[in-house]
Amino acid sequence: MESPKGRQSKASSTPTLRAGDAAPDFTLPSHTGEDFTLSAHRGTNVVLAFYPFAFTGT
Amino acid sequence: MGISTDSRFANAAWAQQLGGITYPLLSDYFPHGAVAERYGVLTPRGSAERALFVIDRDGIVRYVDVHEIRDVPDPDVLFGELAQLRG
Image (tube, rainbow over all chains, first blue to last red; front, side, top):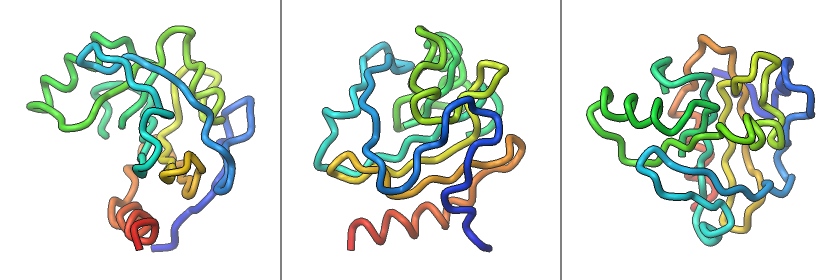
């Protein structure tokens, strides 16, 4: 299967990030109530999986 | 990490229904969709696209995969990208 690497979001009003871009830092609350800050995880690889809504598959 | 524009409480309920989950589900709920917007995957309906970003240990995006909303990404493709980063 060919990987759709780098496809742009057709619906977003801002361009989708591309490989090579710096990942914007953020802090968000997790489902367990703790905050997650991306920049606190430098030194490890991180997978961000955006999904439309809870209960719709992972 | 999973990210959606759901509230933390919806994600907690979903995690419970899944029988527990080993990684955090993050709520991009307020300001609504702000992180999805910065990554370029916020839809006009206020939800996130189904999209994967691999961020390396220096904070650089190494892999982007935006899927149709009904498509579930192929985990083997993702694992291949991660194996390359580790190599």
